Image (cartoon, rainbow, N blue to C red):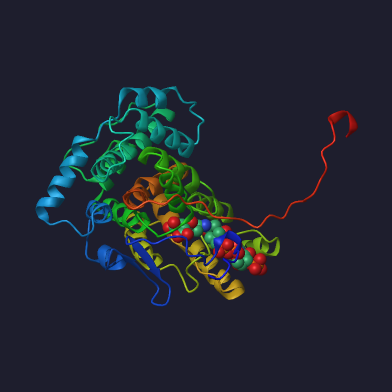
Length: 377
Ligand code: SDX
């Protein structure tokens, strides 16, 4: 008789599936992505496109495969008219994550292969989503600002085009490098909440766009991807490095969660943080604005000394994006632009060898009640 499964709040520590895409090596504090150490990819100068290819296939591309992949992304860099109309009709006050969630869903009903869950169609849909999500983010932002959309350029990669389409001017090399590193670091992270949610949807044989829409919706929460925006709002509220320690101590006193800190898996620090701090340094040196990093550093010292809790990727990413003049409400949408690669890889893996994900639960409600008609209750 197999051991009765036990319940763990928040499924902490529960093995909920098998995957060959990535795993967090907590002992060595590294992220293994299809056999590569994630930090080797950023330090080796990989492009986000190379990492997205690695996730969607099962190894890094050679020169010919990378060129074909980038060409496929370029060809797909346009939005269907119904999606453009939806974006332009949305309230200008709509949060960019709500708009993006709807845009991904509407990309689904415009995709000619929407209902085809075959491996090949799923890979093609993943490429279309990778190409179109940055356009939806930029178009929504420009529309909300009352600005005309900026068409992507064929000579720019995904990181550079994202910056170009948001601002309409040539992005600085340091900005492209920092964005590229952040997209690689955000791309994939095992069975996190939004990826698991996408796998659950995919396990019902809901299509790729439905599963990615579920991922976007799940990532938006401040305990998950929304933390990068919340962390920047926290740093703005702190205002100066001199205020940082007292602010954090006060927040801890009132049992508040400090955004950008802690992680369900990592207990001695998020393996992605050093690489993001390094990328952020490029931006701070170029812009000369070091205040937010200093605030983050003091918050980090305080959280470590008071709670033994380390920062996660969202903290250094937040002040880096702020240093790139990216509006705070676009921080999590940019996380989406990257994580589409990881989510799609998991949807493909789930549907290639599927079993419906349907766990059980401990019932904690009443039993044995007798029904009485409403006039007797
Ligand atoms: C992401 O899973 C992934 O891989 C996610 C992600 C990815 O790439 O997909 O890495 C992206 O979501 C990173 C996390 C971003 N979220 C935040 O920064 C929000 C703040 N963090 C916390 O809410 C918390 O750390 C979580 C949600 C991230 C993890 O929570 P857990 O594992 O459920 O831990 P917990 O909430 O049970 O905390 C354990 C203890 C508690 O203290 P006690 O009640 O036992 O005294 O640690 C404390 C918590 O209060 N704690 C914090 C804290 N994180 C944990 N206290 C203050 N501030 C925090 N940030």
